[in-house]
Amino acid sequence: MIKVREGAQNSVFYLGEMLVTECKVQIDDKLGVGIIHDDNPEMAYNLAVIDAAYNACLLETSTWKAILFAEEERIRNREAKEMADVLKTKVDFTTMDV
Image (tube, rainbow, N blue to C red; front, side, top):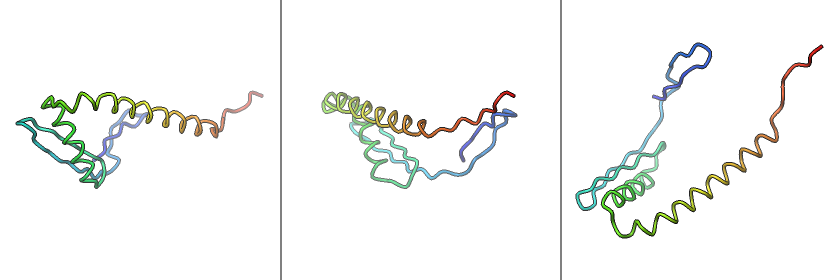
């Protein structure tokens, strides 16, 4: 269930259910967990492998850091552009003083 806090009365209620896919893998006695908010077992598995690889301090992970930071920056830039596009269409509903 998705827990949400209502702003006016500051009360908590449950918005609804959410489907998650979870995967656990083990590399060199180190556990990795991947959890996705959808029915996507392949993505959950990939996240679990990445988590386990970092936990096991594998040599490959040193080259992943730069790639992952670059991808994070690309995603942030895309989301900022999308937000700017949405804000261009925002309508101001304030009332006029008479």
